[in-house]
Length: 199
Image (cartoon, rainbow, N blue to C red):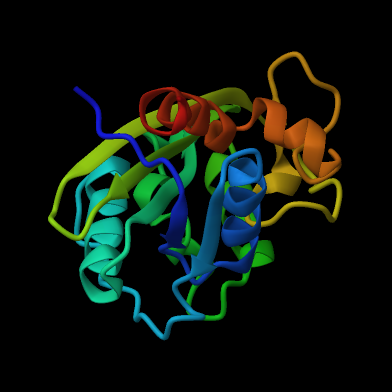
């Protein structure tokens, strides 16, 4: 039986302002007040897991334990089929310490040269953990294609080079409402909401 979170405060266990804003927007219909990990001065743990699920749970557990509040963590990234699923869990690390996603996108394009297919997926694991260590974890994904050159200045990360199947715009060109309807994070959040937030 899944554990429910009815209301109250929830820590979004991320220092990425874009992710914190997206998750806060997804939680807007529920009676839950979100606070980012950075606002509470919580440090980011090392991501030592071998999967998106591992890393999401690691981050959510650490934030829940340190804040004594339920915590929601996202671990997500771009998986490019022709690159064997890379950058995958290393998506943020490809951008380096300075979070230079222009360089990361250029690396994807460089490594794709001569590889053939450009199919890719954005994958998101969401873990909701309580201070007692209990976690509810789900995974969402959206399939698409890598485009070049990058298009659009909305969103964050690899959004300007990802075009979802059935859509003409990249995530970098879409308005936030449209992206929230179809994104990997939205897919994961629908599953988590049904399990943990629905009445």
